[in-house]
Length: 207
Image 1 (cartoon, rainbow, N blue to C red):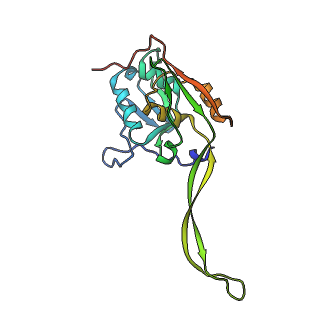
Image 2: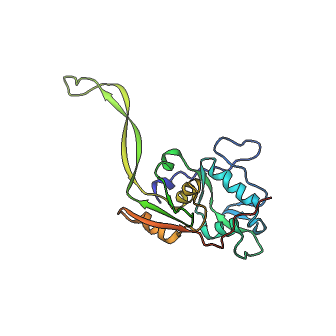
């Protein structure tokens, strides 16, 4: 488990106690012990797009996202089984310090493809350390205060975060999942084409 996966606090709230940073699940999304399941009848409908927008604009993201299912639900391009389909393990916070790890993406003029520069990343960590006074005769020193120090700690990007971050940057279709996951695990800086939209791609239907 990556350090950024350690905090799995749910960002799904109830209608009576919805807090900042939480989202309310629509009727076509069912929360089960094994994850979030979506009624396939929602595929390609504006309601599902609205739900996704609600998640990503609430400083949240999907955890353990099934990207193939996510795309099929967004664009209704694939036949889906009759019963609810599993979309993700849940919705979790996407804190600002993690969002800051994802920089701009290069989108072609015709918006048909996107490139991303993968490179080593580090996250700023704050820690409180004690301040000691002058040493006594026996060598001991009294704590007279404390201060907050910052340091950079190496970390990795995360595919689920990548989907959320690039959505906000305008990349909403066709991420090459295997290529992105491989680049995330690598340690070298590399620029890759990470998404391509075929000419036949249809946007989610509007009312």
